Length: 132
Image 1 (cartoon, rainbow, N blue to C red):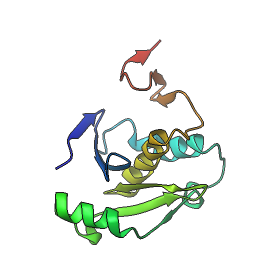
Image 2 (tube, rainbow, N blue to C red; image 1 turned 135 degrees about the horizontal axis):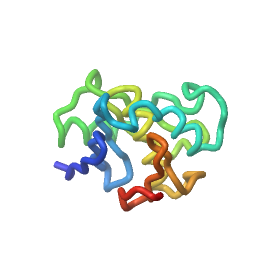
Image 3 (cartoon, rainbow, N blue to C red; image 1 turned 180 degrees about the vertical axis):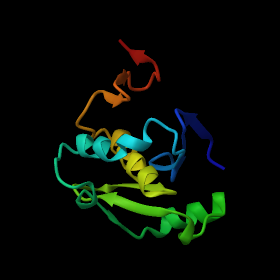
Image 4 (tube, rainbow, N blue to C red; image 1 turned 135 degrees about the vertical axis):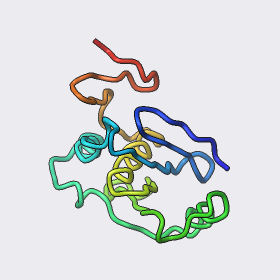
């Protein structure tokens, strides 16, 4: 089973050799209310967030989810970023999927932003520490 990383109400597991994030997001997480704008910022778009990704089918990811976590297709959402179809991610809810796509972009080095804004406080990427 992939190790879990828990931070700010988000639980992240990396699948498929660490390149596909699976995210579960608590509704009290500061990421919950800004997942849409994070994805828009990450792909440098002002468009509606639903137009930035598309649901997809990936047998390798689905097999990994079933084998390692006993998740069925009805338990999660699998999508790819339209502008970067090689970036795929899994979420247990729509907002967790959006955050997973942002993380997927970060894993491939294609994120268009250096800082993430959460509740009017900036978080230094990778550290989890607030920047004043």
